[in-house]
Image (cartoon, rainbow over all chains, first blue to last red; front, side, top):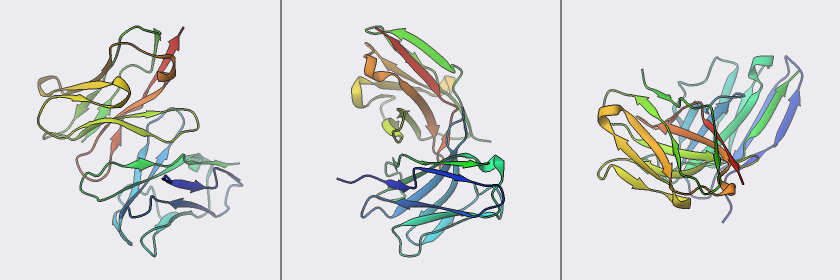
Length: 114
Length: 111
């Protein structure tokens, strides 16, 4: 079956611009997670959705970052006024339930801010 | 604070040799522990997980890991490495619904 997909696979943007990163979870998965992976580091938690609501957004670094999941499936991570330090691979994962269901990861979106 | 330490940044082994990747964690109670593998251009794939019970857990691709509470460790092992095992390996702890990852160990396999 189809796995988690993320678009675009690569995004290059100029400092100060706005970007949107999209995640399509596995069909039927109620939990969705966003992580950020900087070069040479492990993934770092950003936000977790259970259904349409953000159950935990404690990992969002500042108010330039925002994520939505309006219909409980597709999610969009939005970054305003991008900075060079935002350059990283943004990973999305989904799981059948939030109760320790296995998280299935997408291939990520590589964001480069010039 | 919860944390995961993978002390080996890079490991090189010969094909057919045994492998052990180290993972130490810091957490106040019994953690939920995971090992993931990341190949170039691929998403993270779960190798195995420990929630409770038997401290030796078996995973996919012939991997196993042992939870040692006294050492706060969850080391990953494989008796005979294949060239296709070359990848980045991440240990993670999940005290809540957000995984905390280590910095990873890059495995290189020589023929």
